[in-house]
Image 1: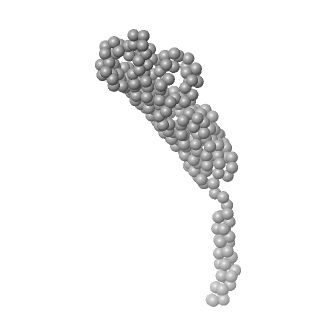
Image 2: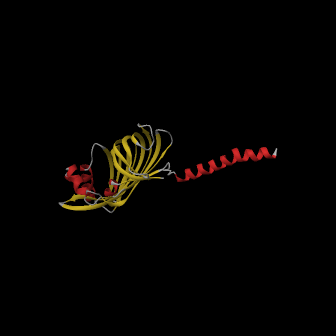
Image 3: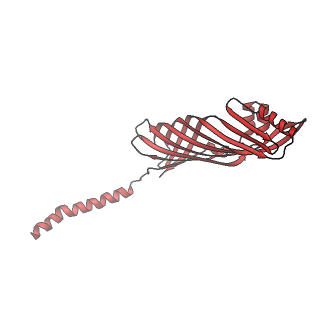
Length: 250
């Protein structure tokens, strides 16, 4: 029996061991890109937004992603360009001193048409929750003199949408995700208010200015009394989604 065992070890067992060791060594030399993508939306930085996205494939052509965006309270970016586009004196007057910030979170489902999750064109339905804060020195005319009433508050928006895009591999670990176009539709509600003593004439002048600021897209209801003003906002929420995200795979 012993000679047979020795021959078996030499002929079968030892070659298998060496083959296993060689396989492990070879596997350790092969680069593994990983199943996680972490990206930052570069153009959003110009708008004072930090927009990060985490993506992970969960199937051959499917991945899930989570986008988180944050902007600290600051002046409205590209204010003059925004005023030129709107071309409304009342709106332009009010946004001069506007300071705003936001927080957005958006879970996303991606279907890649090319057969491999993480590469090529994709269709991405998503839902989004957004919270916007605002500090607004509201300007109104009082007997020919411009007065300022400070308003502040927040607005919450719940919406959903679909985006199309494409993701490129730039190097072994570097990727570029182009959010070509997306549309979002939903609802929003919020409140801004301010506290300051107002006489009857000031109250009426403030009401008149708030009436001028109304529009058909967001329903605005206000209450003005001797202690200040409260403005309730409720309406539709329609936005576009664009971006160019640079990320790493790990």
